[in-house]
Image (cartoon, rainbow, N blue to C red; front, side, top):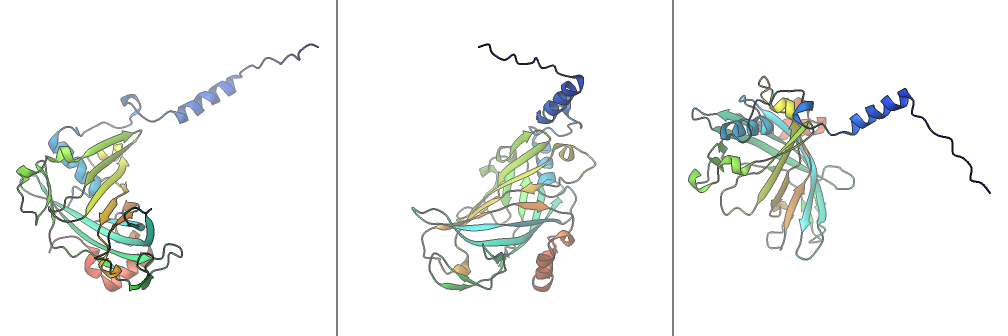
Length: 279
C-alpha cells in the first residue's frame, strides 16, 4: 500500500499579505517606534509625576470631574468565603485646585445608594445574610469636611496633623504601569492614622491623552477596592469582620451623563452633592 500524496500547498500573495495583517493586529501596541504621540511628561520627575497624577484622577483645571461607579459590597468574616451583601451605585465628584506653591487641594462630594444583588432594584430594607435581621437601608453620604492635599512631598488629608516629613514623597506613592496604548496609575487614598479603612485606587487611561499638553484631564476608567468597617445601618458594629467594596468607575464630563435614576435621586435628595467646588 502506498501512502496518498498530499498536494503541496502554495501561499498566494493575497493570503501572505492577509497573514501579515493579522499578525500586525495581534502584536501589542508598544515601543516608541509605534507610538502616535510625543511623550511630554517624565514620570520619574517629581513635578511631572504630580501633574500626571492630577490628570488621571481629575483635571488640571479647577472643574468638577464626576465619576459614576457601581459594584458589590462583600462581607469578609473570619475563616469564611466572602459573602455578597448588597450592590451599590453612586457618584464621586472631584475638583482639584492648584495652590501657589504648586500643590493641589482636592475636594470631593460622594454619595452611594444600594441595590439588591440579584434583582438590582434599589433597597429600602435589607435581609442581612450574616445576622438574619432586617435592616433599614440608608444611602451612604460622605460628610467629612476635610479635603486632600497632593504635592511632590506626599499626600494626606487636611485633618491629618502629621507633617509631610513623615510621609514618603508622592513619587514613591504612585505606581505606573503601561501596556500598549494604555497606562494605569495605582495608589492608595490617604487617610489619617488610626482610621480602620483603606482604598486601593487603580485608574486606566490613554497614553496619548496623558501626554497631550492641550488636554487637562484623562478620561479614565477605574477599579477601586475599598476596605472598611460595616455600614452603620447594617447594625453589625460588634460583629467580627469587615466589608470590601469592589467595582468599576468611569470619569465623565458632566453629571448629566449619569444614569437617569442616579441623577434623579441626587437632584431630589442630595443636590449639594452635585458639585465638589469649595464654597
